[in-house]
Image (cartoon, rainbow, N blue to C red; front, side, top):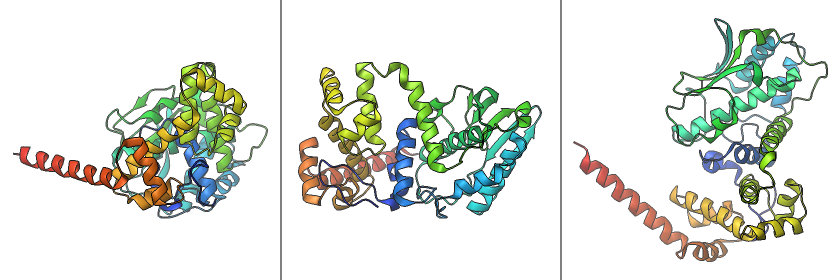
Length: 337
């Protein structure tokens, strides 16, 4: 793992932090950028979201199993079987329903390491749907979205569902499982002539490239630049030089373009750290733990920065948040018949 950052150098996450950094409102770009960074840091292909870690190379094993599949249906079946073996349970299966073929994932008994709410869990599983679809596209050597008829999510209602914006096909909520529904004829598709490396990093990179391409038309809009910088910061890029390179421009150009919007890089980075600090403190983390997670040299440095952002100390903010939650719980209890 990288060493601890000092103020101004960037943020490093605690690998054991599991889903604490998963905000259901993260965009797909932010989410997959974050997961790619975590994968490289902790060398667990579940990104510490499962109590059964998968060593780096698990996706390569799936790739080897499906490499010689004669059809998409066969590749789907072998992929589901291999992931079941790796995860130690029957979580994946392939179903035929009329003129449809479905890749079904049932997470009801999956050994998640976090106790997040339904929205957080749905965000993780909706990300898995994107990952598997992309893995199958890499096997096929072509896009498969034109063969996709619908995406199914167990999410019961809209809200915190930014991940579903990835799809250009109907999304059906309240499903009994998470599913990719392809046209039945897609099951007969043969693989591309050129075999591709099926590596987890390659899959994440393909997803991020696809997302960047879809955002490309608006890349030169000033307001969009601010959101793109925020997205890169949320994905774990450490400094202005890294963000500039990711956006395909020099540091000087990035600084000038941000200035034209009335923003600065340090300001945007501070806003990102402020948001994360509030979330972590509100979730019950100690100021010392938050300082470490956000990459500060020590709790004192974090406290100074937090007071600049909010006008109060981390300890006071945490105490006030607890008090508000207690009052809210009491009010809810008193209003219950």
